[in-house]
Length: 501
Ligand code: HEM
Image (cartoon, rainbow, N blue to C red):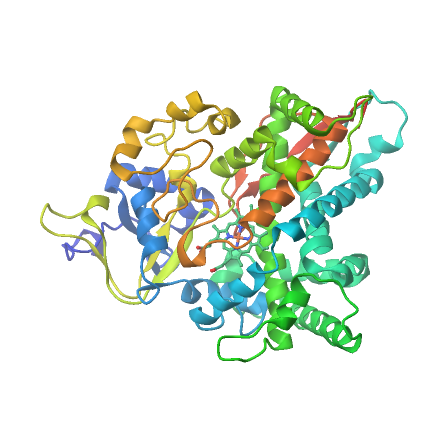
């Protein structure tokens, strides 16, 4: 009845729901993108829905992205929304548990260690980790058999999750973390990871075993990193020049060095921020390649052309090689378009937020206002798959990223006249009003983008050099039940060894 009463006309339309407080949680939780599409049909690009007691105003399309990513931090803020989930996992005083100005400094500290020179070193390390994994893990038992024609199968998501954490440990996290992977670190990681669920986001603390395990794991992992820091300091500089080493030398603008517990918590944040995003993306890439052996073959041939050896086999891949593989880049970008791992980007509204009338308005001469205390939400996942913007939006078609004609055919007329977004060769603007933002935009933009593209690219390139892929059964659907979109199990891919690798 309350929903039928006349409302303040400046409030965005409210999505109808039957159960107070619970609101539209079931529809949103089951498939957020379909829920947004259905609401857009009914209410337009701006609407509010109730999510377990919160009022969440959704702003769709490139202009919605702009409102959420581009509004001033004094008006919309990430920390109020994300901190209940992330602080118990990352630890105190970093990311969303500190003033935003400090987060900006922390992001810069990490960025300075993600250099091209470092990336050059990482390529060999990632290839080596993937090769070792494929040689030893039971998922790739075919490698232990002599019959080259035999087909095996593995779960794309489970396998890629393991490869992702091993490659991130070897590169970003440093030697000590990688060598402790099999000695308890992996278990701590899993306990912490189980603290990153929608339940933990809604209720930061409950007397349940998963919460206790999360807190114990956080404490132990924080101590683990702090012990590394102490022994590095005692070693008089005898350690590698990695992300942690770089953080040890940084100072905040007020001259304060970064305390050990903050370095430890930043390392945990980097580990957790990159894990599901990258492993989910890599497994979607592999599933699409298994579904399209013709594209897998193109990827393979692209590598043969660039660094294949005359008698078969390959020389070591370099950073320059990686930059010259347009099909690989297109495959990754197209996968991130259709399977953005983060479907909802949220901010807490700190003071009333007027909605630009181009996004939607109650009347021609007024505008909606999102009131203080609401949450605003953008969904690049939807604008990246919007048939109003992209031609054959739901079709995985890597060629749209490297084929000039494909680009021109990208429903240009419908979109870029109005927004001036540059659909140049393989590039979509990174501005806050772009329809393609798998890594976000604005002050909270991802700092791991270049690393993630490298990690995903090298893992896929290495796998494709070693095996042929096939998909048996239907293409897996997205699973929205965790905080990130991952492929629903079963997501088996079939494989057999290539004749030459
Ligand atoms: C922020 C996506 C990999 C670290 C973000 C945001 C997105 C995103 C959408 C913006 C969130 C927001 O505005 O609320 C992705 C995707 C990845 C990926 C799709 C892989 C395919 C990584 C990796 C790292 C990382 C590998 C670490 C090395 C971060 C950090 C932030 C961030 C520190 C900043 C948070 C903030 O300023 O609020 N990422 N990410 N990400 N990401 Fe990533």
